[in-house]
View 1 (cartoon, rainbow, N blue to C red):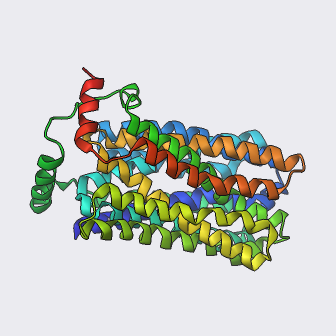
View 2 (tube, rainbow, N blue to C red; view 1 turned 90 degrees about the horizontal axis):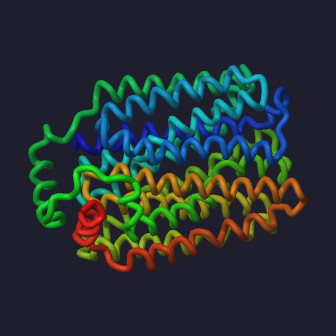
Length: 419
């Protein structure tokens, strides 16, 4: 049972990360009264976050592989909490973009560390469920952000938003330091993992690997490319939903606080049900690869519904966003568990870091394109069809890059890459 408590604890960290990253999008109108922002400047703020996030997603994976999960996650969380609080001191666009860059640098290490927790504590049959619980933190943070920020703005001011959310991260860090331990203390789990290791890893995997070694493997490229495409859409939904409601639907902060939490709530269900469904198929004796791909295909299939958003009433638009958020987070849960299925534990953090790097770069590219198109009058009617196609293409990439799940073959390729 201890490993499930750790999954919930890490889910709390992910919730805080999504609360922190939603502070600026939800409070953008209030911030704009002091620091005016165009659509392209708003895109640049998100790109600054995602650029450092991408670099640290890859670097954070290496960091946790070197320092270990407990120490690595502690350092990561301290940094991003202080970076979030630094937004409160911004008096110019330049200071705001610097704080955003620092926040991304800290948060980039969160998911690689979370992936290591899953690899350390959970056998294959439980990993998708555990990752679903952890990934549900994305929804909890995004759900909390609109109403919490609306309340803070009503009584204090936008600078207090960043101070309060930064303090929440520091409180979590104290809890993590005093509660997390490695699985060596759990003998039954050691036995399960040893048996699984004998069946999945007949050779000793390389002790150290360079990123270039990992990128020589087709499975790595497939995961990175799929994440590039799907996260391009996800970061658009995440960062631009509040602004879309402000600009295209005429919402004020009260309206955003009242309704913008609904799609993230659907995302939470997607995290849990996507992971549960895949684990259920594994327990019913489906091959791991088949179970993951069936759940990924179902998740990708619902995403094109987002193209209808600009053409329906606002209540239906919120419903369509909810379906897309559900599908995206079901998809994300499954994509992030794939490295634990395919790669040896010694490189899971590094592989997860590369996958997240690809996703963040996708967010930068598509986010900059969105800002460019909107400032030049093209409108959301073009943007939403582009976003709605990306998960389907990403699923096809996974089918081509990983036609069959063969962890033993991956280990052989890793050995050859370092020979």
